Length: 292
Ligand SMILES: Nc1nc2c(ncn2[C@@H]2O[C@H](COP(=O)(O)OP(=O)(O)OP(=O)(O)O)[C@@H](O)[C@H]2O)c(=O)[nH]1
Ligand SMILES: [Mg+2]
Ligand SMILES: [Zn+2]
Image (cartoon, rainbow, N blue to C red; front, side, top):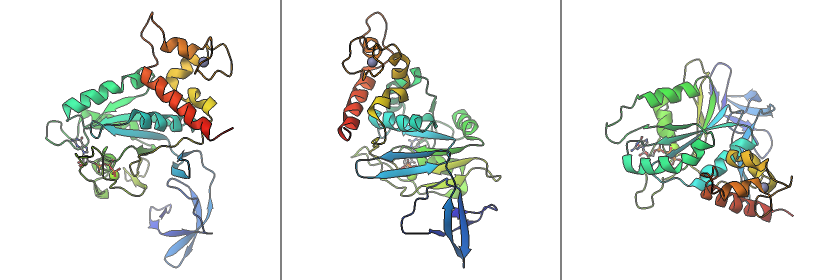
């Protein structure tokens, strides 16, 4: 689907067999009858993607920021959050974290605490109640307005696990979009993969603020990232990696490692959580296996 200068949306077909085009791309196209042909993709300022073992999955291009939307329910995976953050850092795209479903007080409190290390390392974290179950939280809350401020004039990819409320957010800010949403499965504590394609919606009539709704992800492969670069993309690690004795320190076993000594610090609370260090070690291992 291609949007013209005047805001019309036209079905276009890629020239050649395989489509390289992703949401957010600027393209050159030629009309043919009532549809069109994509002739050329303009150079991208960035491309947000994941790289699983077998394939590359592009989310969107030319983004101003990524909103990682997680929720009190279903419980979010810290590993997937960490991976999404690393992918954003690697592409120099600003990530913002939002925790939805603040009306579910108890699981929300737990999830909020789980996010403490991410707050400490400098990420902005917004509490939200996009579509509260009971009317305990007004829908047009201060929080929603704060979020709107953050989105204004920008192109934002909304990313997160199934059931977090990505499409509900689209419906809240773009009521005419009427995107399909669905209850999560309580039995599986997971969403139902309601959204199956990535779509850009304009929030305002002037088309300056865009939200990109995407399908919930389960796996987030980072095979495009060098293991030695990982610490650079993790703000809590980066802060201490500069103290390492060896310039090519892996922060796994070296003597004089700034990261390890921070994790093991006894004179103050470590700014690198045990969980983050475990996630780093696992990722390092995983990303080293496909290389030699
Ligand atoms: N309790 C509560 N439920 C919410 C809130 N926001 C959204 N929901 C519900 O969460 C469920 C999932 O919302 P969706 O918007 O479909 O989630 P999604 O992230 O688009 O999921 P996928 O399309 O499967 O990736 C729906 O039943 C929503 O009504 C909230 O603030 N509180
Ligand atoms: Mg959805
Ligand atoms: Zn080190």
